[in-house]
Length: 278
Image (cartoon, rainbow, N blue to C red; front, side, top):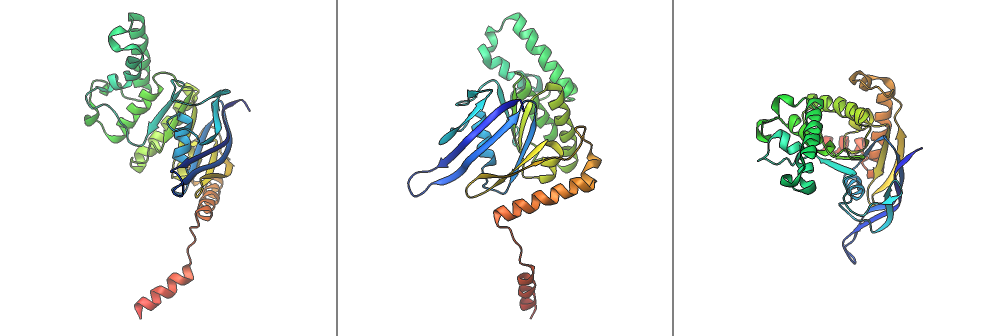
C-alpha cells in the first residue's frame, strides 16, 4: 500500500489531574494515497478529535501522525477541512469565497497578474465542477444548504490539497440533497485524486462513500475494527438496497451498539409497559 497518512500510537488526553478524559488511545492506522476512508462510531469515540489531529488543529498527547513521512504538527496547505457548518464569509460572493484561500497567500493586492489568472481559472473550474456557475456572484444567504456546502468544498479544493478532511459535512442536509452530495464527492475524489478522510455518524453514508470503514469505540476512543467495503468502485444509489450492502450495514451497526453498550432489554421494556398499563 502506498501510504499517505501514517498514524502510530496516537493518544490524546483532555484535562489535568483527576479530571482527564482519554479522547484517543493507541490509534494505529495507515491511509493509502487517493484512498477514501470513512470513520463511524458512537458519540464520544474520538473520531472528530482524530480528524482535527490529522488536520493539525489539535496536538497529540503522545504518538505521531505523519503525511508522507513528514510529522504533522500544525495546519498546512497540503490539508483542507470541510465542516458540517459551512462557515462561508457572508460578505463575499460565491466566487470570492472560493478564491479566499489564494487571497490569503500573499495578500490580495500583492498577487501578480499570473497568480490572479491562475486563481480565476481554478475557481472557474471548481464552479463548473460543483454546478455553481450560475450563482457565482450570489452571496451565501441567497443559497440553499446544499449549495452552500458545495461552495465550502470548492473553497477547500482551491489550493489543491493532498488531503481533504470532512467532519460530518452533509449532516445538516435533507436526505435527497445528501444523496446528490454523496455522488458529487465521489466524482470529485476521483477527478482530483484527493485522499479523503470522512467522519460521519451515518453508517449507510460511511459504506456508500468509503473504500474502508473504520469503526471507533468510546471511553476511551479507539479503533475497534476496520471493514473493507465490498462494493464496486463505481457506486450508484441502488447499491444501498443490495444484500451485501445491507449485511455490512447490519454488521457495523451491531458492532457500534456493542462497543457503546447500547443493548435493549426488550423483555424488561415489555414488563414495564404491562406494569404501567395495570
